[in-house]
Image (tube, rainbow, N blue to C red; front, side):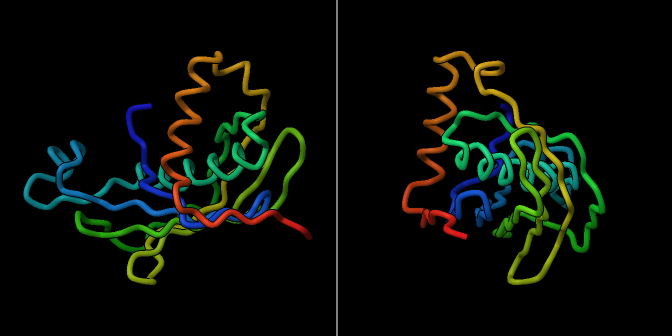
Length: 157
């Protein structure tokens, strides 16, 4: 994956919700062209931030037995520009979950103000179809970094 759009996960409640963080920095290569003299994080990368947070929630919740693939983005609304120096708080909540699919709502806030929100649908497939053992190890290492010091809550509802 070219862009890892999460810096850390603050909290995760299994099969329920996740709070993650992305610090937007001027050193990210996207700002070379978008836009010269007026750097703005593209909306597609805001969607990617939320998508990765949802993927992290679903894959971690499955014990890394499932690969979550984003298939539908609905009702995406971009409410404010995101610029270097902003800290994005990524919130994803499960709306529905089955063995093969999940729908999540998501919101990105900067300074407690919503800058983007959407509803996203994922398919859930056996992880072995997408990641051979060595690649799985690398992906799980990324999760270890994201989850360092995270609050992990077992969903007991």
